[in-house]
Image (cartoon, rainbow, N blue to C red; front, side, top):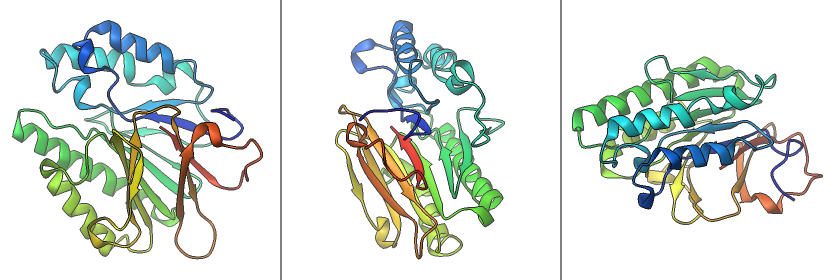
Amino acid sequence: GGLNESTHKFMVHLGSATRVIDYCDSIAYYRTESSLSVSPVPVYSIPGNNDWAECANPTSAWQYYESHMMGLDIKYWNATVDYDVKRQVDRPENFAFLYKKVVFIGLHMVTNSDANETMARLEDNLEWVASNVEKYWNNIDAIFVMGYSRLLAEENAPFYDAMVTKKQTEWNDKLLVYARRASDSGMIRNVGGVENFLELKVGNEWPIMDVRVRTGGDGMAKLDYRDVMAVDDDDDGDDDDGEAA
């Protein structure tokens, strides 16, 4: 078993291209880029706190991130024929694409010292999610959102509240998933008491996580996850393969 083109379609790096001990040195970003560049499937990346917000010089750190971590899918892999990747005009680190019956949405979910800037980022993220759900509404069974920080973190309250409201009203017949970085892997079901709203915690441990969103059957779409090393090469190819993150 392992990450391969026959059982996986793409991989998403959920932030922290650098470690705290790297002190945001440019070599750290290059090292992560180099490691991801040999993936057999396209890789997408979203920023984490360690990538710029908590660096001594956030401006320089963000430039390193942009240079080494954004647009990896274009830099190292040919354009996919299975899905069309879109990026937010004012925040190109945010991306979205429809794969089979799932809309995958990557967000810049990072908090920094400027509260106004953080709020503006959350508002842009909300707009990006809502616009893509609306765009693909007739073709999706599931909404798969990805970000670095905890959904229930106090600073993310406006985003969290909006997601709960959307899921309880307009999106009540869709599976809603928020995937994020965490120290350990696991899943929180029925976030905020809302049925079919899941928070997927993607741990830092190896091996990386294999995620499958199963759609097309009767009832609500379903989410499965496991270590990517446990994936069998003869898995049913009719499932909508999610990210290995």
